[in-house]
Image: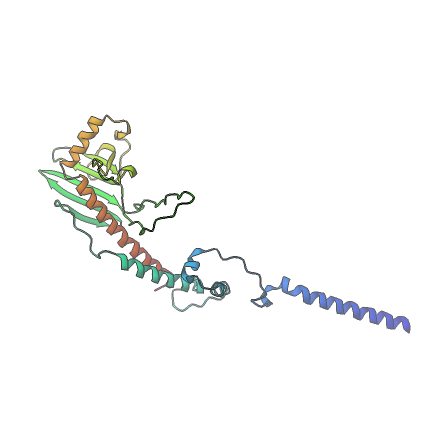
Length: 288
């Protein structure tokens, strides 16, 4: 009889211990029943939400992390995923679009002097004019035309001067095509903006702010540069020949004045396209 009582007590103790152990292990093996405060969260590294939060406490970020991603709320008939993160993304884009429109100089594109006619095709711009029977066409694309902004390193002990942020200027590569009525091919100049020629110091002699990279004869009107046509690279070109080519362009209206206006036009186009991209992105995220 005594042995039976002892065995019963032993079994009861083992069952009690197993129940306690299971209860302690449950939060680790079943995170779905844990309270949000008990869960371990990983650092939220996406800077977009940090910008949208404007320095608020981590409560806002925890709210984003605890959004019901598995059960999104679909508020329209697009059939897409809608999360708290999407809403925050859309709100951020609204603010960004508003700021960009504030600094936009004009909604209309600046006019080019010299009788140039502008034709737009998305991000590609084409300027054309006729001089004494010759057709001159200048084509450029504003994609990837904003040079990177590298801040100068400050030596120890020096203070960074209080200056306004540098103005964003579009400096696209551009192609000049000169076509004569009697010629079967066009003379094509591939031009660009050298970094060391973009600024002139006071007292320094003014030089060309653009440069010719390559010259070739190409079939008239072809958008593709044919690699089978001989192409002259100007890196190792005789300077006298190069100067004559620059004068050839200047006589047809492609000079420093023209290129200054081209940069102004390209900057305006690029800014318009950037705002339009943000608006399209916002519409896509919000599924408007």
